[in-house]
Image (cartoon, rainbow, N blue to C red):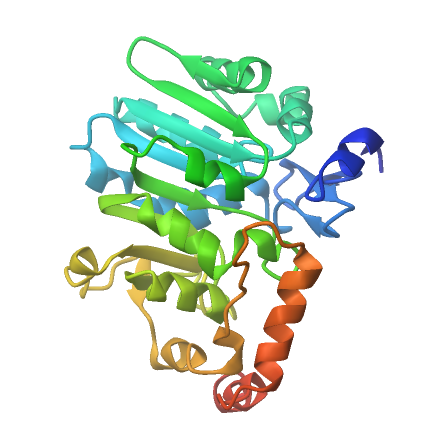
Length: 313
């Protein structure tokens, strides 16, 4: 397994991704594994399959056709799969977009663009946009534009122009237990403030702490359907939207469902205790320790008790 290392970058920022190793997924698509986070960028089913199932399909871009331009925020761009899929879809629908990306490490996108396996999946127009993001941190064509902000997303989300909000926010950091900095109550509140009317936040994450933070930010929650009805996975992720918009989504469809009783009760357990980072500067160890201490003194139902009721039937 080959690896890409930049010792200087790892030491210069506490969130740098460290050594990156090639990781071939089951559908053959190109991905990476971060040694720093001890986690892959995608699950084993495949990078493109995951981007479509957990982000593009539940985004339901058809419902946003009237937005001109459609404003998209990609939090943790990584190798660029979510953005590339979004660009392909919006091009098919002739939608003008205003895209922004947040990412701390420039290497994953550069590595992806150097891979024939990755490049073969995208149109020339999409590749040109990704190349401009990688080289110049921005891109522009006759009707759409994009800008990448390199660095700690906790800082950049507060520095975005105040007049910009987003119709689609794709939230794709490493998992909360590995990268709690980007799943805290404070960061998710800052993300939620940036959500436009009738917009939605889409994430692969189903953790109770994350859903609870989004809910406490005034958002309504939907659960993303697994691709297969016989799947053992009870949810493929979470959609969050303004409460007034959420009330119009009572009828389930193929992409999502209302939270089940099991999912609602999950939000009443100790698992729902939030990750907190009041200063916006704390390390992952500090954030995890703070949450652990709160869980130890909590009178909420234990997560194991909830699991016995629902997940072991």
